[in-house]
Amino acid sequence: MGCGADEVVAALRAAAVVVAEHREELVRLDRAIGDGDHGENLHRGFSAVVSKLDGSAPATPGAVLKLAATTLISTVGGAAGPLYGTAFLRAATAVGDAPELDAALVAGALRAALEGVVARGKAVVGDKTMVDALTPAVTAAEDVAEGGVDVAAVLAAAAGAAEEGARSTEPLVARKGRASYLGERSAGHLDPGAWSTSLLLRSFAGGAR
Ligand SMILES: Nc1ncnc2c1ncn2[C@@H]1O[C@H](COP(=O)(O)OP(=O)(O)O)[C@@H](O)[C@H]1O
Ligand SMILES: [Mg+2]
Image (cartoon, rainbow, N blue to C red):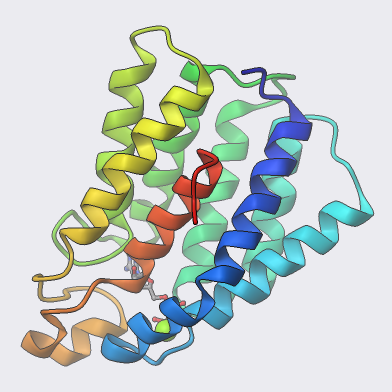
């Protein structure tokens, strides 16, 4: 699979559709252990990304990712806005001005995204955040990319590992973000940000529903 600017734009449009489809679910998850805005926040952000993409067509994958980053930072809000914004910004920087993404560049972009989220939010695996989904996704992506596969296979591996990581947040007690205010009562619920990370990666992989 060739992965130029057009394919990255298509991936972001697919992500916006999936976020819209899962808006209520994300609201429900965030209502259980947060303030209930995660679905609305992401829906507003990805709708804005689609509007920006409708109005301009950046020439490289990196430029598309950077446009998504700046748009998410200015529209999503909450804890997740700056975190997702940083993730996309670091991914954009990692791919530079490459005209096409290959498996190694995608794995590198995911690694950079995770490093950005960790630098900004200081969460570690087990804190019940998006880091619990993104960390295994990056490891899986890197493992697969070493085998010289295509971008689709890297994203599929990342999405599968992210889903498993997101599901692993259910029994955890939150140690970061709003959910941590609940202490022990945060256990027994999926983390909304981990779940949205899983959904986004699944949509990038082309299989989300
Ligand atoms: N320090 C952090 N590091 C990583 N992710 C975090 C952190 N704090 C919160 N999150 C993620 O953000 C999600 C909540 O996002 P959202 O509801 O949009 O923001 P808010 O908590 O401000 O209402 C959480 O489910 C969690 O995954
Ligand atoms: Mg919230």
